[in-house]
Length: 236
Image 1 (cartoon, rainbow, N blue to C red):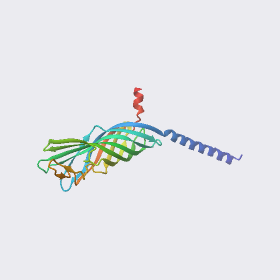
Image 2 (image 1 turned 90 degrees about the vertical axis):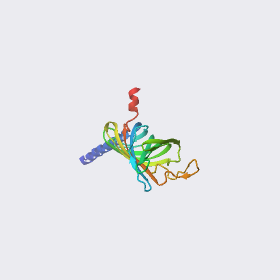
Image 3 (image 1 turned 135 degrees about the vertical axis):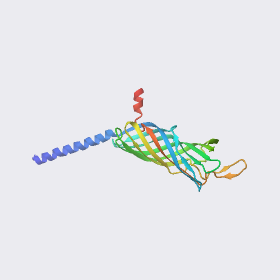
Image 4 (image 1 turned 45 degrees about the vertical axis):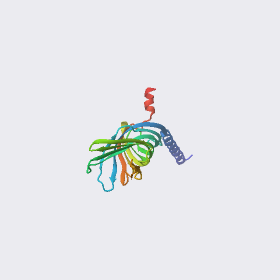
């Protein structure tokens, strides 16, 4: 056999071995696992009511925001995930130009289904993630304050006062040791502008007509993508 042919055979063999090794490594990096996380939310909203001046107040919601995710790592640098979550979502608006001064607190609990992807150093470094979500608002609470004093409060299940289906997009950064920050923006108004209210005298009103109420928030998440087995292995 000629030396050139021998060299070609050796090079081809090395090349095929290298390709096989890369494919084997990629296959070994594919993992399916679950993760859980709590979320601390700082929310605001794009609020307005026709020509009335309304102030937007930062809302702090540390509870109850729970996420369960199912992750699939395509490689050590790319992952896709979905799951289920429950979220305490809302905003605060006030008008100090009226007498009495008015403040409203609006809150819903939602069940959500996220769909996202993550790229970067998935398990030892920094990674970026983004995606979208649909949520169902199943419990609504509203508080009304006049001159700082609470004068009204009610809770409704499956309420028509809000747009029950909420869609959103999010982007976030996951840091080493489980620290995670996320920004999320909702495309729908939380309050239902077409909601009709009838008082005791039979008068009809539309309390949320002309009101803009699109929520956005920043949140802190901890161990959002850490496999659940890390905790179970500790105790079992």
